[in-house]
Length: 104
Image (cartoon, rainbow, N blue to C red; front, side):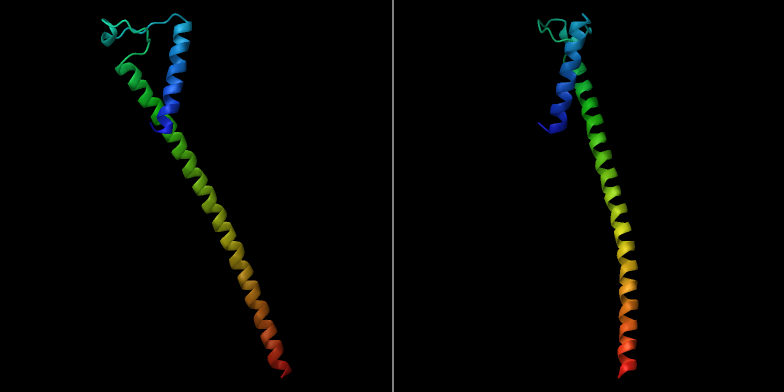
C-alpha cells in the first residue's frame, strides 16, 4: 500500500472513531445484512479514503513543486551572482594583461 493511502486510511479510521464516540451511524445499503460494527462501510469508506488520499497527494505534489520553484529561483540568483563575478574577474584579468603588456 502506498504511503499516502496508509495515511488516508489512518485519518478515515480516526474519523470513524470520532463518529462512534458521538453515537453517529451512517446508513449504508451494503451494511444492511452485515453484523459489521463499522460506521463507514464499503463504498462509503473507500470513497472517503480515495478523497483523503487525493488531498494528501495534491499537498505533497504542491509542496514538491513549490520546493522545486524555490530551488530554481535560488539557482537563478546564484547564476546571476556568478555571472557578475565572472565579469569582474574578466575585467581584472584584462586590466592585469594590459598592465603586463605596457611593462614590456
